[in-house]
Image (tube, rainbow, N blue to C red):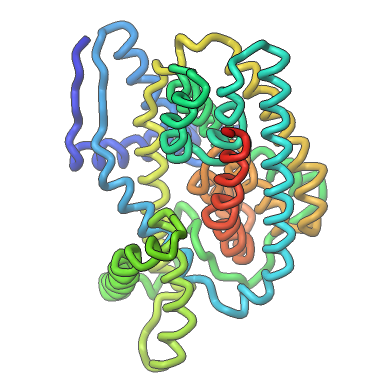
Length: 401
């Protein structure tokens, strides 16, 4: 076996190529575009399959340096925070609570499905959390964090491999299912985006006309400067947050800092040019999200799930059916049966089966076609990247007793 490590700059460059490859494929295959499959997902899955073929038939394992990916995640969520006006947050108070309740309820359902699957298939008890919310709602990070404890407590040596495999498969399914779910709901109920709303993220593929005049090197540099300052403040606050006993992912701290800054600085300094709801910020957010997603998917090591058999595929199929039914028959009606609810439904696929960036990518793909949905982009990250992590940790701890 030969291992090849790809440097950071080359990884970043390949990710851009992967995005353009996915964009070309989506243009060539209209159903992909019609079903709102993100370009980065199409290209990323193709790249992951390519590395799998290289590993399987040529004995070469390709690994990518992902430091830039982690930084792009911070840029993206800081941008989401900078777009969160207090008026939107207050207006989204009730939908935020409803979405949180729906997510907590689904977390319980997902783990009940995992418990039933373990009992029915005669699997080790310790795998329950990794067939449920630890790997699906929690993703790779939660899986890696809990695997050593589960392995030690239940004597399951393959806990890490199973968890990562489920998280990987869930990420793929979530990336492919969110857009079609939203398209079905939008077509079924004759929905459309509100007129006159500015895009938070998800600019059309081609930008032109007077609306794009405010994008210049000055506006982009101003936007990047504000983003960098917000991220630096978040890094400075990280230690203080940890001392409170509250463990938050760094991108959540960035999101919260962005929210605070965008609701204080413009009021204190009204003459200051601030990037909230500007096309420059939407452009930077789009770039960060698409390259992040391309890097995440192309770096998946699909061969790690090859020896785990059909059991995981079967369990994930059941989890997917349950998630889709819950989204269509519970989440969409509870969130109001309107266009915002359809966009949130696309994002909920990422919450339930993939990860927060996948949820945002799904919503972005939908809004590029059908119009902006500002409220969805505010409340869903707060639920999926903040509140639900706390609840999930408590549930995993209970199951791991």
